[in-house]
Every structure is written in C-alpha cells, then in structure tokens.
Image (cartoon, rainbow, N blue to C red; front, side):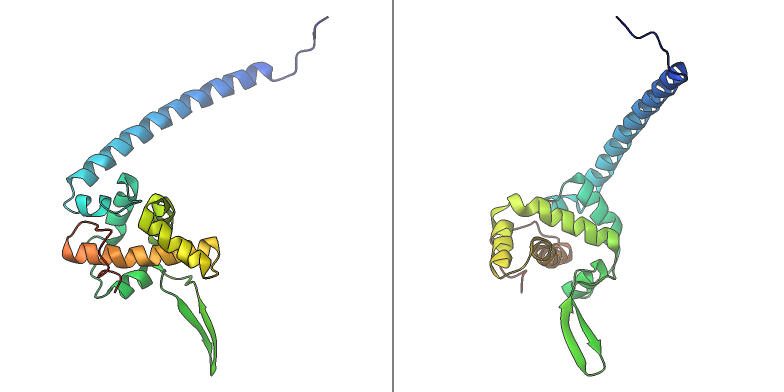
Length: 175
C-alpha cells in the first residue's frame, strides 16, 4: 500500500535544502539591514525632500538618483536627458536623415531608474494625462513611458537647479 523504494541522494538533498534555506534567511536579513542604512543616508541628504516630492520617487529611486546625478553639473535639462540616454537621436548617414529613435548611449542605470520612476508615476493624475496624450498620438506603451521619463528628467533638472519641491501645477519647468 505504500512505496518502499528510497531514491539515492534523498538524505543529501535534505541537507542541501536546509543549508540553502539558512543562507537565504541570512541574505534576507542582510538585505533588510542594508535597506535601512540606505534609507538613513537618503533621509540625511539635503536633496531628499526635493527628490521624494516628485510622484514615483521613493527611497530607492531617490538613492539611485543621488548616486547617479548629485555632484554632477548639467548646463541644461537637455544635457541631463542626454546623460541619461533619454534624449532622442537622429539617424544620419551622409545626406539621408531617417528620423529620431531612442538613444542607446548614456547612463543605463539612470535611464532605467527614470523609466521605472515614470512607470510608478502613472498613478499621478498629471503624469497619467501626459502618458494618455502620448498614447493617443499613436505611441506605444514603452515609447510613451520614455517620453514621460524625458519630461520628468526636465522637471528633475529644474527641481535640482532651483532646490524646489515638485509642483504639479507648474508649467514653467516643461518649457
């Protein structure tokens, strides 16, 4: 009525699984400790209120933005967008010009951070309206998110330059 065959290695597998589970528990504890330390460091930074006032920017995103942008000087918002790889690039070869496409250059970490931040900001009414406007213009989801990330890059530049908090009603930063 019951199985009497024991597969070779069953006891060894039980030992390995037990050790892996212990290692995983240790790694999770270390990850939580590091996250708490990062949160303390971000909270102590003078730009923390400026960064976290923007929708879609939490502690992790603020930490990434601080490591990638703080301490660097960008003369214009376009320079920051180009550094992040969010500025469109025109395809040219001789006299033929083939339109604009997303840049493959730039700081990949910052571009990914801005992209994920734009995705998280879709809960914000104004960001969602901009995204929906881009979708209605015929852009696909990723293209609309990249456009939103570029716009947020311009807003981030103005916020960092002036040291001001995010203001959803302000239209001057887009110009």
